Image (cartoon, rainbow, N blue to C red; front, top):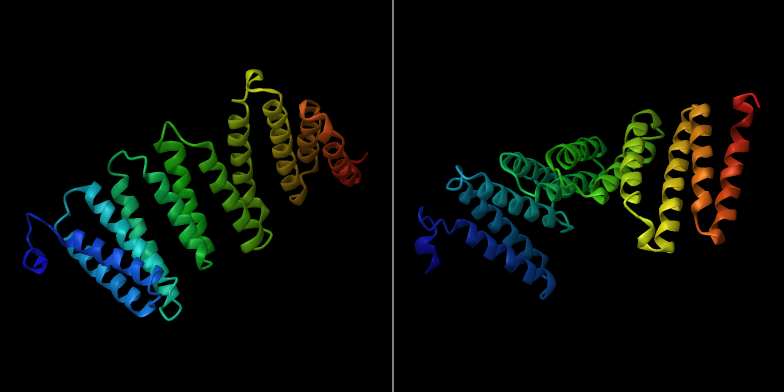
Amino acid sequence: MWQKYAHDDELNSSANIGKIHQELSYFYRDKLKDKNLENTHYNQAIKWYSSALEKYNTNPAEVATVYESIAVAYRLKMQIEDDDKTANALAAIEHQELCMQQLLIYCSPNRKKVGDALKELAQTIGLWDEGVTNSQKALDIYIYQNSCYNYDDIVSLCTGIVGIYTHQKGENYAPALKYQLLKHEFEVKQLNEIVEDDGEDQVYHKHTGIGWSHEEVADMYIKLGEYELACQNLQLAKKIYEGSDPNDREELNYYLEEKLRSIESFLGK
């Protein structure tokens, strides 16, 4: 019976039919373990969602939702062994990008989730350049488009970009430094929100976290041969560790002193 109204412009049931097919794909995946029928319903979902776009073309919120649904379907198709993982991933990225474009037309907190999805999706198949690009876009959204950004979101994205530059793309520390410093900035902001009234353990955590963040910056400077800047950050970390848990302080300072000794010869000391 629903087929009678499938192309009704007023009802615009195409998106709902797409959703039904997507729910059926989950059923075949989770309950019946039938990958062929699972994939068939993903394909049907994509078909009906695409049909819905022809009718939702004036409402950016509705268009964004449909693009996101298509991206999810392609992302799930990636998990089916016999299907083309790379082609599905690229299609998912394309539709997630289109979703982001629509989201940026109006204000919505869901934009941050799109940024995360873009980053994770690109990294899934080793598209590291796209991973960096999409993470940068997400950072722009988090920092410049949202007044109430979440520190964890920004720190997570920066950590991901640093990892791509220093591991997946080789030991490429120069471009990674920018994001290590940005990560440090927001980690310190977040930890500085801890006050004495939050309790002793939280205050210890604050000092350990800020000190460790300075150490991470120092490690990056050491890799780049910027030993003076590395030394400055290690000295700052040493001072900040004075407020850390006394039970951890000795170990923290032991490894920090080792780093200081390792760069002494480069400082002419």
